Image 1 (cartoon, one colour):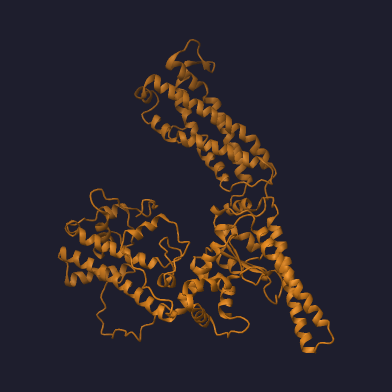
Image 2 (tube, rainbow, N blue to C red):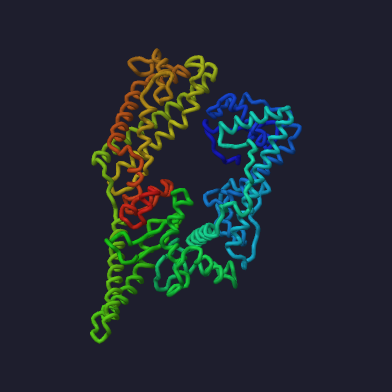
Length: 620
């Protein structure tokens, strides 16, 4: 694993101290070890205790180099396949990109990519620009088949080495592999049936030409969008702007040179059967306009980073689509609608008005033949419809840009405003008392302090003190945020601080981790008090013990007040995180908060019907 990997108690990890990890990787992924794990836990829960019982046989050391080489080869095989997956940190370009030598300018910047330099992974075979996509698909099929075969081959070689070393062979080995096959998704048992193997002619290819070109079009679209100065590319003709298909044609010229037209024509034939007419590549145009976004969603596991905006759903029975564009989620900002309005909608509306007026004159011109007037009337209605769509789109985006006051109880701001000074006082008192405790430790020494309070007291305080102060500082910030008027956005996670403090303030039980648990121990100095204040003439450690004891009652009381105020606020605010997250995005007008994720940030667009319906069905 990369040093920046994350794992948890349900996904544990091994960190060997005395040997390289690679031989252990091969050993622990062998069918021998799978069998030994199944023998302990057939439900396939590999707890630490299960793995701890596994023997590390001498073969791991004797064949260290051979096993390490096998593990690296297996990782290389897996990385080779993942280098083609759009959502993998190892993505290095789709099949066509890698084969033709097109280097995407925007590959993932992910720390896990260092593995690409550590193992001998193999890219698909390189080809020349004159090769057809059909031929590329055949080569890609062969490459991936060999990779899969190599995965099985290396795994079997590793298994054979380990089984032979411990003397397992023949029937016993067959029984072990059958058990693994029954209990897992692996099928290590060799097929000894008399069925004739498939010939190359009978085999059904898994890589088709239309699949590799759709992946290629997706990658080019994402690259073009990322390169655009404001991360917006129109899907319709707009004066002075290159739409997506035009930009893809330019990319093909850069990549395929003199064969660009031939490759584009081939792509067009693969994507449909519409013949060229007014458009040179009608099937590519249709796919980009109507299928690219859905394909992107499917490839990116329902989390699109390339959004499609459309005006089509804003009117009933639209004759055509007035406006559509792609938007780069990574460049998305609160100024998106101003950019669309200025750069695209104004010139588009002017163009549509001009065409509408021209067809309006033609449909009213009695000197023209009836068929021509009827056709002009049809086109007039088409541009009238598109203008209506754009007007509706402008109104929808204006509404999104406008402030949206959250549906919040008006009492929240006053509760938060009253609570903030109490939290401040509680934090300052806590800091002062911890400082007094530090002075007492210096005066008495740690051993005497532990004996006076408890052996674990200081360790617990030192473990939690930074967290206590930090939590109270954050709580002050949260109170301040909620004390403002409803026009100010509030970060969605601040609500959690009220619940957190509710669990960490108020208990003086000696076994708790609450801030106020300090008072259970500080009360031990009560014999140094007189009428609740330190006795006259106390010095040194007695004076410090008295100061700590004197504040306990007030500390507990203000802690209770803070807890009560936090309870009030948490009850007055939405418990549902999504509601609070959407409020943060929309309070001051649409302003995306990337850390909340795609589904939250695209929801306002879906509610206004300016994205395709698939967003509601697949993304949200």
